[in-house]
Image (cartoon, rainbow, N blue to C red):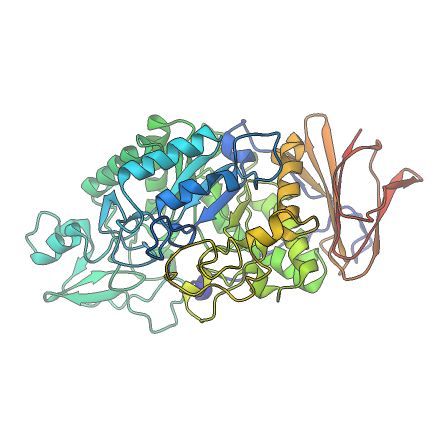
Length: 553
């Protein structure tokens, strides 16, 4: 979404169970935390996704706004289609923030779901983007905002015109203000019922975004028709905005969010998408706690990856990855993985990420600290699931100079020149500070750069099925404040040991009671030692903020 959601993130619920490693305070040996690999072998379970704000990625016509032809011109940077080259980033899929016609810069209030935002191009440009991405082996998913439309959408204009309008029930109307609070902050003074033409309509985010009434069969059918429309034009799936808030049954937290009716709609919608394009993916934005996120996979009884949304963004894990890099300990991260083990259905795939367009950027949160940025990249690209990267993270792009949401979505710094390689005109919003070094040209050919690290870690994933889509056995305790974070990724007979040093000093990690021997280095920072075996266990010494990844035999 375009508005800040910091108030909507509820505290993470965690377990107190320990895992292999130091004994628990009671003296009992803790049970290991083991996450199973995902069921099936779907492309999105192994993919690295890259989130793009088209307005800020590449301008092709000098108007200062990014567009689809500009994005097409930069596809080789993301993936050139040649697995033998190492200069491209190597991502597997693009998530495009809203590209449909909208009166707002961010696009989350749509006025025409069948028209591309004119600043970005045309439907034909979009089809060409999908074709060019597919030719390089990349998939494309788009933001599909169906919780609400723009108040300028013809549907809403017609609905608001009269109580007798044929589209009156496409939105929620009342003859009085029902006084419901926003479900993410029910104690605040937020307004969700807004006056129009002698009545009130429901808009959970603000008056310019009236909620669609998905209890109305005609609205549900129209949403499914629109999904088919874009699937036929090359889309490989949808990121589903505000997925918790689709269908309300009354006022209050349990009636405005996570309702049984919302889950029923997602089952209906997912079944439709699978019927049109069986390998399409749906990614849910459910900004809440681990147990609630887990419910959005639905049942795995008949659909192994879940009959609702096969990927869901892991907001608690994102918070804990950032916290681990700041505080230098992975115990909280381990507890979140333990919580996932308890809450998530077996065989589903996770969607880890560090930040997205609603967050303060990674580099700003970590104060530009190179070691912490290195840790963050290594964590998100080695934990289970399909990681999502936010454009510019790979070069350490910071927040812009203001405190609004636009500062999280500034133009991509391709080089240090006046237009940043982004535009020949004046950019629609100022560049983030620090782009003299935090730009693609400065880092792309520089060994040891953050950009080089992202490339190498993505290639390590591609070199190992276990790292790309395997399960996980945690080697770090959920208790204490150990400065290392370690686990084994497994798939079939392949086992991969991953060890991260989260401290600002050299650390010896272990001992890890693992059978076998390190057979191959998949990734290792400079001066990372080789694992040493003694008394049936392994130990390894890592420099400050370093990572080592080894395939075991």
